[in-house]
Length: 220
Ligand SMILES: [Fe+2]
Image (tube, rainbow, N blue to C red; front, side, top):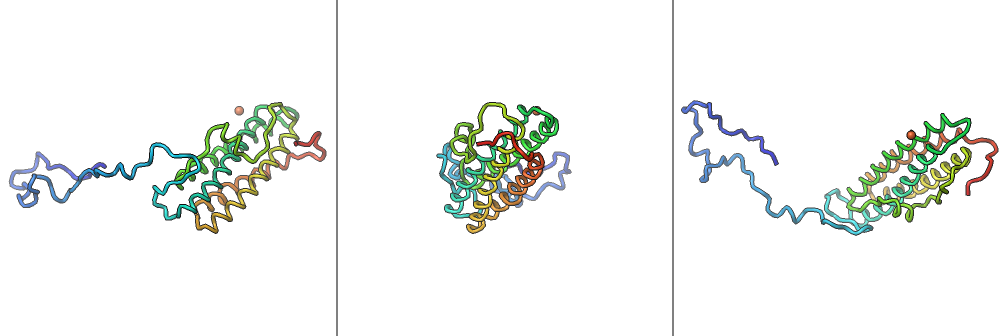
């Protein structure tokens, strides 16, 4: 850690030199006592940690059980949010038809907003001492959103799939926000309510206005 202590100026007049009593026996200034913490590696994070476990390393006043509950819920929300984010980009690229321009821009806006949520959820998991799910294959296994085909689909089907995904995610958000509230994990509750629920509800509103009376086919 950097010290703010100033070294004695070589320009100071000789008459103003510090009195000998202000120096320690080894010549150091006792007012600035900086020593290395030789045991700090005992508190360092373990280089490896198994997915699904939580550490108590960060002193945030939450029990291991509470952290475990929150991390489990947040990893589910993270997998679903990554999936929804990527669904928006897929549809951003593949959309065609008379509403192309509106949807092309709207999908990308929502993709960016979901990316912000992904980072917020993942970092909350790390703060709680957990391990955030990250890679596509792990996300695919964990996500509660049904697999989307690789094919390009018509805009009404894209809209239908997005609204279904939002609804699944929002139901999980309400369940996990309640659980975090019960456990006293205010930070997780706030993240889910203030960021996830608010953002997803807003996106549902904008996407819902593109629902047509008679979809050409139903998403399954
Ligand atoms: Fe683009």
